[in-house]
Image 1 (tube, one colour):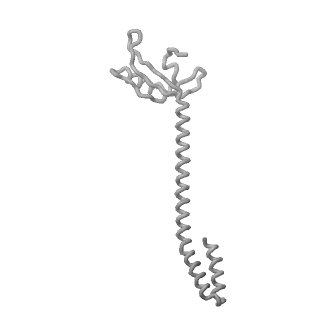
Image 2 (tube, rainbow, N blue to C red):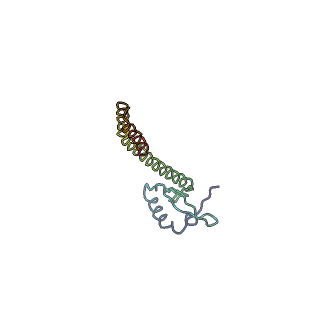
Image 3 (spheres, rainbow, N blue to C red):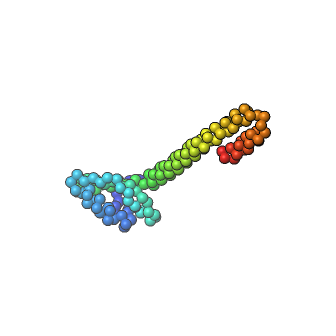
Length: 148
């Protein structure tokens, strides 16, 4: 379960300079180090990222440093999920803005086209006996359908 082990035997050599500095700060009066990620070596030699915190204590009449470590894998996984969800939300928002922009442009284009079609239909109804206008209105409707 819990065992007292030398911190140097638990950590990878790459982490030793960071740990020396943190232990030195912890031994200063009132010294406590905030949580920091370090890499330790598991019993089989596999590296494991951990969140560690250290503080100076009295142990068997001597000044020592108490180090507490917690596996950082779940935290890192949660942070990756948060980043992924944030990126997905940003992409969704960008698509939504683009959709709204395109819808607004389409609306602005369709307004004058609808007005032209309505006016052409009114003119056709007033001059319904005249074949050239009647034929022209049909072409207008087909062109309007193509544009919109």
